[in-house]
Length: 315
Image (cartoon, rainbow, N blue to C red; front, side):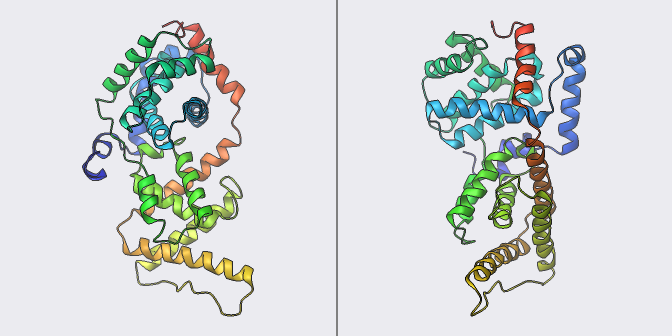
């Protein structure tokens, strides 16, 4: 892996502004306008959810670790920044991305195992020849300019979880948020440490509610915590101490508040992009709202339609 994120190809070549990302996608659609009009697709977030589900299915069968799954999801995002999705067979692309990610994350498996499982999951949509994955792998590597090293938010979370006294429930919730962010554009917009810190913040303000619960209350709580950071950078802060003699439930609440205050104090003393964290929080909350409208059947049919119509399942 590159010495650090700041010197990596990920930061130099694969981190974009929202406007840059929108322009790249618009240019791709303009270059294949007839194809785009012929085969309309659901919103991108719903495509990301579908891809995540399919990668999860094959990765569970092959017992692939989460970091490799996350790397594969980022490869897919990068690839589809360069190539119009309707020109590819997404089932072949995601299988190949996972195969390549396993090699890069040092948990390789034989290519025939990927072919076997992919054919079992999508018998009418994936070609049986091993050479197809080999060809697609070369295509992916070429479009990503051989820039395959990925920095993940998981490392930051592991490093900081003891500093903020996160319990196992909070760690699991932060991991869930990090896993979910791969179904958004955030990996292409922000550094991994900003994602990890946002996940920690949400793990503190979401408990005991899971992601996608009361979004308005979550947004208000996260915004209040980040506002406290802004104050902390000007000398304000809080002790986060519990009150002697308070009821057990109140004590637990005060412990949680104390964790948020400790986290806010850390951010106030750092150079972390607070505006970026606010945007990450908003994007994640929007994602959870969008997830509620996801329709697996229509998304699957939209993808399968152009694969079959263009004969992409045959080659």
